[in-house]
Length: 634
Image 1 (cartoon, helix red, strand yellow):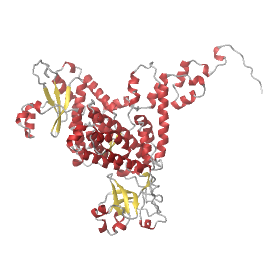
Image 2 (spheres, helix red, strand yellow):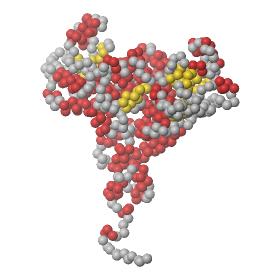
Image 3 (cartoon, helix red, strand yellow):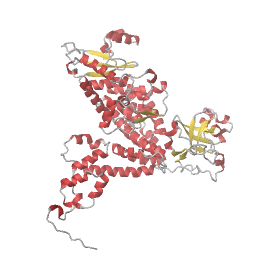
Image 4 (tube, one colour):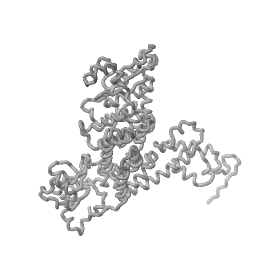
């Protein structure tokens, strides 16, 4: 082979050089093209690169990698500082990624066993907002994952508990007489009720800021208007962009009681208390003293002029504040005083009191409005039967909400949220417990009812919230002299159960098991009541109490109490105990255990099934069990 002779040169471009000799500025530019994993790996190769620290580079990765931050990071305030102000961005990113690895590892341990499942979930919940980004990433597992239903169910349980923690913190401030913005107090309901709330509390406030800015832009002359004119102009503007209340046929749907859903959905449908709250929050942002004002069965907005001035800008010496009333839910007109007077007289208010509307119609404090909103949600089921889980798909997102959410980087590929009726009722119990001060608990004497409601919801669906109960409920009981030890025993029972190995119920070698005809995961309809349900467990014979058996008239059944009884979850979210003779399989499994054609997962059970099952087997028409420890042969 012919040799090739190099021609030596002294030009800078042809002299030997080394990557590490490049100036820091160039290395920073190169590193800015790497993802975080590659960047960390590269910097770990040698001391020169490891010591090459660029706060701006790490800051960029903190912003791009993570949407949610625990309040202790004070992240939004740090971001407002100039980029040249050095912060420990590298250490902050390392802390978050370390948590991500731990959470991913813990999440894998949750599915295979029930032992300490809730304890593991609580350890994830303790990271609060710092856990949400990785949890949402885990939630996006493929539909054909072998444990897709279980994984999504338990991750959603952790996310729900994180959101409830933040909501309860807001409500508890009210009992301490701490100021809580109206939108945050109401938005806490959204954190409770939604699987993935359209907006966080901070986003709700920022969304209202944006609407106030939009009003100013669309009404450049607003500053020259009188307070009365400006207050009316705001109602007219809100109704022009879709905030017109809700159609009567949909009045009692849960979504209309949630402020972030009302803000984000293009219909902006909302009940009066939410309509007035949105109006009042925006009005205060443009210099109008507007607040909700409650009358029986309705909520109005009361607008007040400053002392010494009328709503029309005139000087006055009348010590009573000049006021007017608006109903943003119904129309954009002022409500004439005589109309309000007649309405109040018709409700039974004495004429001596009604003669001065100031004596009857006063602004509602945030705490009072919260309790009223809570009562509205608690009463929804009397008028409208929402399913246990139902999805509000915000594909028709309001234009300004779309711009706002995309600008903040928080818009999901399909913006939707699943609402839970059980979580809504659970929220009302927490409002009554933590937003009311101890004196009110003593005077009202209804704490026992609230605790009973809490205990029922807790033991059925919300045992993951045991730390919240210890943090908030136990101190209330202690301060008012209630039985703390009894409540501690109640909570500890579920902690102990979580740590215990389940008692197995095998089929093989057990004589009584021969009568168990059906298996965990099978779908059936009740022979008499026709509801659809899935089997989650079984007993060879009825193990309910004698009182329950007498109440349900079990001995009148053809097979009596000695037939097999099944634990089941019903499509309405309830769990029941069903006799073998009332089980009618929904899908035929005559072909070697396979159905004749693939069967889709029953929609009413899809969201709830992950509590007991790994996935849906469409070829067998049944769920795949995730309770093998208790039912090893199913």
